[in-house]
Structure formats: C-alpha cells, structure tokens
Image (cartoon, rainbow, N blue to C red; front, top):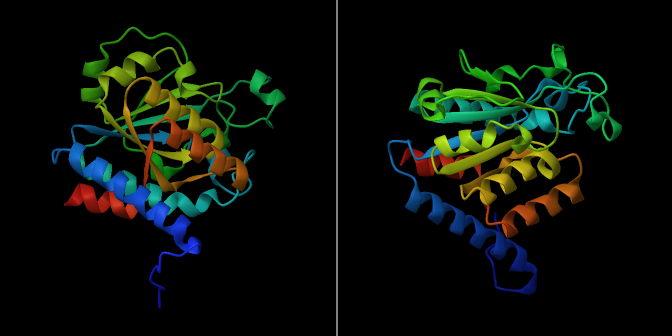
Length: 236
C-alpha cells in the first residue's frame, strides 16, 4: 500500500515533484486546444545507433522508452499532430567524432530512425540553407526530419524559420537528455516556444549528467510531464 505523506522532511522531494507535475498539467490544460493545431512533437535523434543495444553510441536503457515513443507517434498520427524530428547525419571524420565514437554516419544502418518514430512519407531537410515556404511545408508534411552534424538541432540553418512555421507549443522527447534533448529544449525556449519535456520518454548517457540537464531545462522555463498524463490531458 502506498504511504500517504505526513509532511515530514523525507516527503519534501515527493511533494516538490508532485507540485511540478501539477504545474505542468495546468500549463498544458490551459494552453492546448482540442483541435491539436496548437501543438507539435519534437522527436530528438531516435536513431538505431542510439536507441538499440549494439548501436555505435547506444544510450543505456534507451530501448525501454520505445513503447512510449510508439504511443506518442500513434497519437500524433491519429490526431494529425505535426512532428519535427532531428537526426544525426554524419560524414566520416566529422569534428564531433573527436568527442564521441563514430555514429549515425549517412547511409549506414545505425543512422536510420527506428520504425516506431517514422510516419509514411516524411520530408527530410538536409543540413544546408533551404529556400521554402515553411508554412506551406508544415501543412503538407506531418513529419519533417531535420538532419544535423552536431549536437544542436538549431545548427541546421533551416530550423529557425521552420520553428516559426510550427505551432507555438512543443512536446519534446528522445535522446540524449544531457546533450541533444537539452539543447533542443533550450533552443525552443530561446525562440519563445512553450516547451514541455516528456520526462519518461527521454534517456540519458549518465544519471548525474541527465539530472543536471533536467534542472537546466527547468531553469530555462521548460515544464515536465509524463506520457500518461499528457495523453490523458490531450484526450479529455
């Protein structure tokens, strides 16, 4: 049986987390319209080299969030929610390989997204300037995949304009918490996008570094929510 809080010092972390969850739910409830046109999902780097055991830069335990990812994509597909996906698309000897093992090299099996985070006929935007009508592009393509060659999604020169064409509320998930997820969330907040990170649909390379990243995202104004809570709010 679950122990009820008696208000002791030992309960403070539990109460604080409960309060944070309530704040997140309130934010979502007040801001999200029933037609789903005011939200989009930001799917960060859910690629085989990160997500699956044996991948070149496997994130420990990342495969355990795949059912959450499948659920989020199923919901988006059925409700016509826009999805922005980031993917690493490295070339051999990319500068990033000075800090990390080679991974997600273009054309390799490991660079592919996992099946659970792919819709039919997504649009892929390469890591170079693109002259497009981004509002029209978002309307025509439910999933847009943006390639990058560094940790930060916003290093792709198309992203700033693309973000402005997307809805004003972002729900972020993927890998890794302390690198690409954190930078994506911070970039969204800097761009003025209301940002909610789906806390049980992210995975970190390290426990301590992941927790520090969560704290940094909170300080930047990102809220946190669970998949179950989000689905409950959006389905209400």
